[in-house]
Each structure stands twice: as structure tokens, then as C-alpha cells.
Image (cartoon, rainbow, N blue to C red; front, side, top):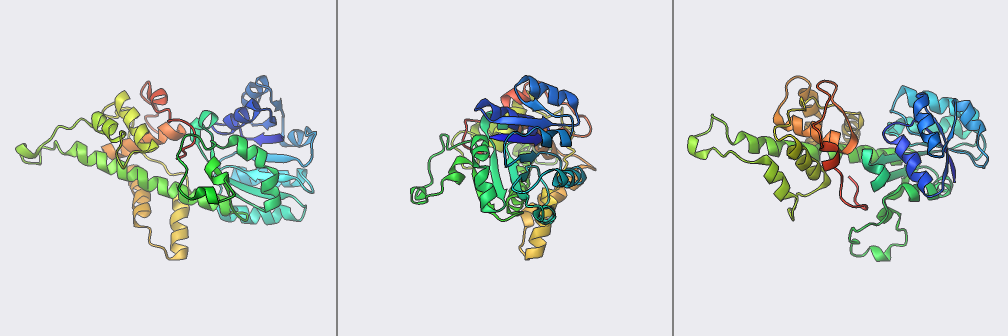
Length: 347
């Protein structure tokens, strides 16, 4: 298929590369001309503007994937594309937009006959090799039309054992790593809750390692103090433990590279989805104690920092390349050691 991709950062550029590996043809644009030039060397068609990108298509319908930060820049880009695309064309927002913005934007382009699809995309900096877990919202015709793109980007079944009973379900897209979650906005809503859960899981690990580290506190009785080796504990928990996970793999890798996580300050940002998840919980009157506490801990981390918060920063760097605003370096070897296991599992 032919696909236009706007936004060639950590994930957008690798999405293009993964697609082109199997023959999809990409037209690319980014405000950073070097990012465009780099992908053009890999076989993509470079564009100098949104107008230029829209005019370079040789196939119909035109399919454009926007991979930009949520908020103003995505909104402005979608508005501009709404004036450039036409009847039957498909506009995809693959970033982390708020699902209510998707619903509003879809209505704005519908009168022109443009299909709007929201794709919640998980995979971070490892998506090129590992694939992307995707949660898709939009009308069935548009989602079916872009299935070759989604199937290429997804991890595939990989080596994960099938869930018993799945053989009775005809639609195997979820096993391959993507789903049509529902109408416009549903994809980003599911991804939003995914990220809220991610906050809670990360916080549980962080607090656990903080408790382990604190067991050598001088405030404890001398015979109750344990000088525990967190690097070895993280590693043994990866082997057959019920709490093994990719997040634990990332933590273990970070501890090997820097046992005290000295390269991390403990300042933990939030990208918005955690807040929106709590807002949804309030609207639905659903208690969300763990997710709320995890979000509030991130707020507090910007004032004072514990070892657990450094662990959170280490995990965020490992799966997404997220760099702290301050003290923004990572220990040598973290990126390589944090490489996830084989394809098929998604965070």
C-alpha cells in the first residue's frame, strides 16, 4: 500500500522503516528536513510540506498517518489535512490523542467524505524490530481498508502460547497484535486505559524495590537489617516468577548498568493518558485507587525523589526512550540490555 506519514520521531520513523521492509511505499513529511532526508535514503518519498505530501500520491484512496504529540500540533495538522484530502481518503491519528478530540475531529472531516481512524500505538522505541500493539477506532470500511498496514506493523502471533479457546474465535487480529476496538475514539480510549494500567504496574515495581532497598535502614534493629542485592533480585524474579514482565526486564537491565540508578534523578513525567484515565473513571464512577495513586506519585516526584522514582524513570527510558527533563543521561549499556524478548508480546 501507499501511505503518507507525518511526524518522523522515535516511533514515526520506525513505522516507515518497518512498512518499507515488506514493500509498502511511504511518502514522508516532518518539519525536521534531516528526518525526511534520512528516510528518503531508505527509499521513502520525501515531501516538503503537507500540501506537497498530499499531492505526491499515485493511488486512491489516499491514506495519511499522523504521528505527532497529542494536542495543538496534531489538531492543526488534522485541520490542514482536512482541507487537502477528499472523498474516500483515510486520515489516521496514530499518536496518543485524547479520545474526545478524535470524536470531534472525525465529525469535522466527515462532511468531506474523509474517514477518520484513531490508532492507539504501543511499542515505543522497540517497535521497528518487535512490532506495535495497536488499538483501532473508526468505521469498519476504513479499518478494513488499512488492514495491510496494521498487519505489517503488528508483532504477529510470535511465540506466545494461544489462549485456550481462541481457536473457536474466527477473528485472530488480537492474537496478531491489533484490534478494531470500536467506533471513532475507541482506539485511543483503550490505549489511554492501557497507559493508566502501565502507570500502576510501574509504580508497584518501584515501591517494591524501594522497600527492598530500605531494609538496610539504620532506623531498623541491627539484626533485622538486610543489605539486599537488588540487581540479583530483579534477575531472579525474571525467571519463572509470577511477577515477571517486560517492565521487570527493563528494571533488571537498568540495575545491571547502574545498581544505584545514579544516572536518573527520579523526576517522572506523565504524558496525559494517566490523567485522562482517572477522568474517565470519575465520569463512570469506577474506583481507581491504584491508578490514581500512581499518577499522584508522578506529580510528587517532581518535588522530591526516592529510589523507586528513579526506577520508574529507568523503565520509561527503557521502553520508550523517555528522557528526564533534568539530569537527562542514561548509563551506558541500558539501551542494549533493555532490549525486549522475542516478538509477539506487547507492553
